[in-house]
Image (cartoon, rainbow, N blue to C red):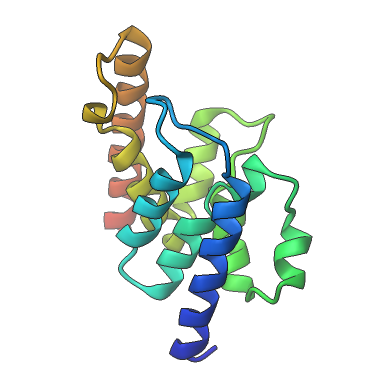
Length: 150
């Protein structure tokens, strides 16, 4: 796929993400698409941006990997989205391990975790927020270590 094709795709992903996350809010009550947009725009490459916009689509909607393949997404993007998509029957540790095995998914997940760890988004963080932040910080450390090893 040429660079201009990816840029056209990026506009399409934004539309998909906006539609999927319509009426969803994050833990602070803000439109969930704002989180998706921050993760998407944090990507350093067009592929990272595309995956950033789509990182929660399969998890949060009726859209499947087959649907994404039918839309024409290339295998490297599908594989990264698959790697970053949580499985219901999977432990957090196993999930982070699986993410770490895909370099693009790792970069996107780091952007996601960094944004989710920012407690300034929450007016008055409670114990659960602090616990979640600690969990995310551990995951960031694991992903960074794996990334450095490659």
